[in-house]
Length: 267
Image (cartoon, rainbow, N blue to C red; front, side):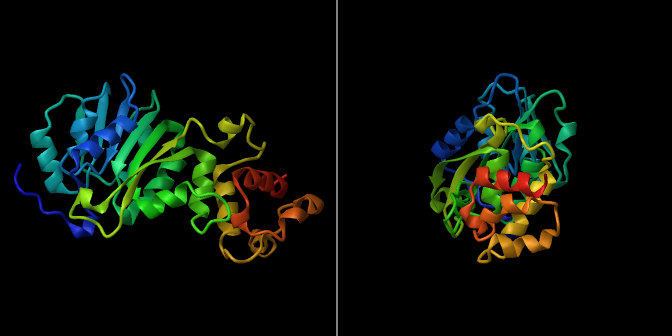
């Protein structure tokens, strides 16, 4: 393959370590006949490892037209399709309406959060997502209460998925090497908080309203829940039930307590 110059504007850092590429492909736990989406395949280093697994389709979303040309020219597997478009603008429901998707990707750092939140929003059609992200982002996704990493991404991702950090990846495994290390994280959307706890969501639970509550509670991180709740207005909450939460800060509440608080705020 001819030399491929990376584009800084696209946040391109290509992973070249074959052992790590193999570990990521294995971590996806591809099932027989499954449709897999790869975000940002670049020139196909991870793609080639994924095609060793028993998937039925591998749909790769790539923005760089030069990379698209390489992929179309060098990967002839009939199961493989490259889509030259922005993943963030894609309606995943149209790809595999008959089954849940398996998502994998080496995510550009500058759009990691939008991609993660898109996957969370469309999780009903995604079985799992295995993502190579900036180490700091991975640490936020798996963070526990009362730590500086714990915040909005921690609560929302851990409510809507079972999140695990699988392993870390040193910057030297990429070309060009980024300024920070990375981590592989996996989000299992079939095992969200309610499935793990074997409890049903509150009767009036909605993703949008729960996410709005969490964002509001963390809007001024050092302030108490009492102060931050003012932005929500009067929700009809039971004052006595709400009282124990008011002196606390959002960073003190785990996912279970956040769900309980939601049920009090929106009876």
